[in-house]
Length: 310
Image (cartoon, rainbow, N blue to C red; front, side, top):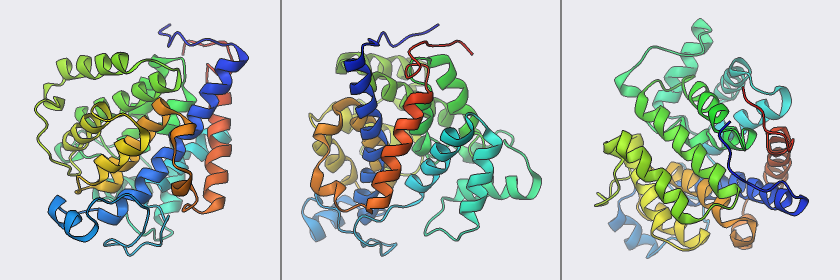
């Protein structure tokens, strides 16, 4: 069985649990920070904010400071399902449908199409679609990564299956798996060089993801999203610096922020998450994220201390 090589001592497991919390918390913070400048250009951001460093709300959705969008809301659907019933794409899809019917503030077009297909036809995956190479599946894969800690094969299967509820495209699949693997490595204390090798290995298989030279695009196309996230994660040296650099790229900034926040949260850990950012989130959301991250860690092969092969 593929293994992260993580120690299972009580102290090591406590560290992983804290990093799991930082993963989901970081994703929500990246969403809340980036939503302010979603669809903005870099020049527009500079003109209005200089450098956006605070969670201030607003943006095209006119959000309250700390309010989150579909990135966090769909991730919570996945996390709640995993914590409540274990692995069930049908339960995840049903939670997506219930959320969709609640008139959320924002829903991506590909997610909208996939959820509508499930509601109308009950199918958990659609056929391959060239238009499915968006970032809406990768943005919600973090809970799957936490629930599969220490089992990379299980991660790969679950990451793709949750993605196919709305996105059926090889580039989306590859992004989901890569984000999950980087979270695994971050949560288990792997060095940056190991994460970089993982990125390089994926680029060999999918050259379109190459990040050098960085093209500076930050659209909802999953290639642009991943290039932005990976470039800024690998070229910065703190959680806050990573997220600030990522969202100030503009474009689909709530999603790039959410994905970067999950990876950076896993890698840097809870101690690097700015308290003043966390204070902007709704206390009930922070409590739920903490509870869910704990449940997912405990359900994971690593949390059980005896990794299993599925």
